[in-house]
Image 1 (cartoon, rainbow, N blue to C red):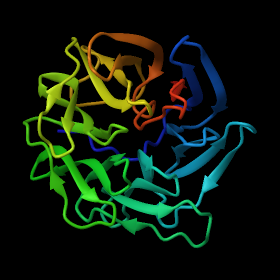
Image 2 (image 1 turned 135 degrees about the vertical axis):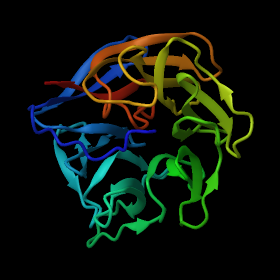
Image 3 (image 1 turned 30 degrees about the vertical axis):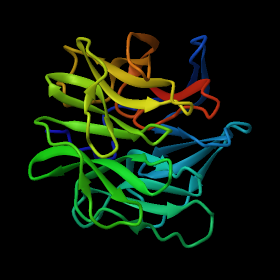
Image 4 (image 1 turned 45 degrees about the vertical axis):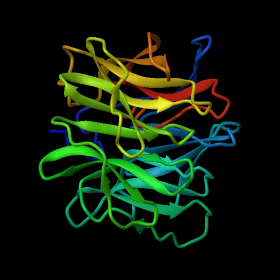
Length: 294
């Protein structure tokens, strides 16, 4: 079973978070900011000027010119985890928020206009639901959800309504994300034993394995031009295939979207929170991520 993802609380250790970028061509890393508390999962805005990350249940906007963070008003959605995605036009954001009624993750959408008060709109009534993708046409959300004891990939209209189940394999399917051309959904699955990267058509057909190594590979993120896929890798013996914990030595790897050999882009101490959501720069040149130090 998927480890239920709650907002992480660091009680026994003081953690340091490093908001970083890496140049996918040269491998050069740059630390943008250091925080003496937990931050997670940066999204890069389409104008290339900001990074959106979560911390302490809320969302923040990091200005890349001033290196300053600003709280994003999210109304009552103040227990957000690291599954958050910007709409294609960047006018709205979808989040996975743990509702006060039962503490389970559900998906909400709210505008990024700055107008007050903010009223998040519930999209998935059933829980747990963990957001990962927004279709390029703006109409559909993709997510991992547990229904009847198994975690699979689902989609739902961004306005809410009836969800559609796309996968039904035994084991965990997670991390669904649309390709920029809208033709595929990338995801990760334990159906062959270890966690591996997969790809399917947006209607769930032609589910195809894309990585085959002896590692556990999570959260494929497709570059804006559709040519490359970044993902995070745990070593086989470090974790159970269905778990993506924090505080592990991990790698960010890069492969062509057509498949084939990967290359290691970054080795770091991280895992959960490092690169849960798509963090490609709009020019396809950089990835944003978070590393940690205990």
